[in-house]
Length: 225
Image 1 (cartoon, helix red, strand yellow):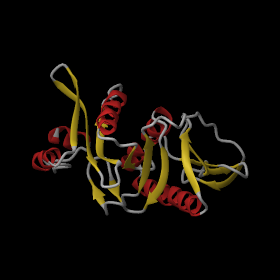
Image 2 (image 1 turned 30 degrees about the vertical axis):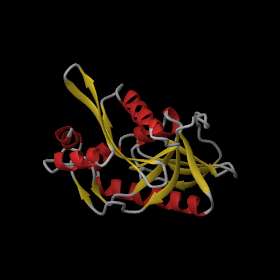
Image 3 (image 1 turned 90 degrees about the vertical axis):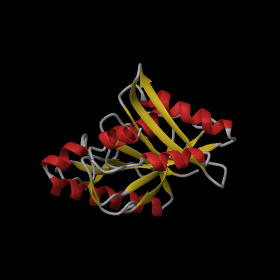
Image 4 (image 1 turned 135 degrees about the vertical axis):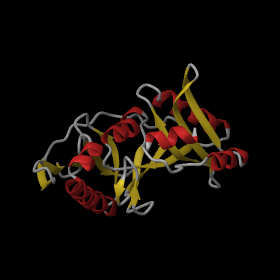
């Protein structure tokens, strides 16, 4: 599993070392793998928290393995009495946002600026902003599809629209493939980071949460509660 995490993040350094994973499991956490025969095709590691929730530290999977892996982690958490699970992910990775918000029905509740400090692996470069996701394990929230609408109020680094609003909800666009943008146009990737950060911090200051992601890369944000 330690080797798998390093391969996914394209780094020779330990993302989570074998020793750390053993300690997590020994302390009551869970290290869960998804297999295709004998081949590891997905992995996730989580901890049970003092407030009775579960914190998912890391997850990675091949297409098709992510959902059963996350459901297995949910079953472990519910078996311990947890009613919710939290984790973080990069705001600019649209496919992860859609999986979290639409496939699982989680909600984004926090924007953390430079969460890990500067990063430099094969996937991440520069500031490590992250969104915090909360997944209600009771199944109380039904996920929904989102389509951006309303007035364009900000322009993205690629010249297209960045922010839309219909007066009640806000939509924020991210790149279709930010990993490719980072490799081909690193300065533009930094501009995307700053632009999306501004939209989210302003929205969260005003009581919004992110509840959906469209197929073409638009977050939907609405007032919480």
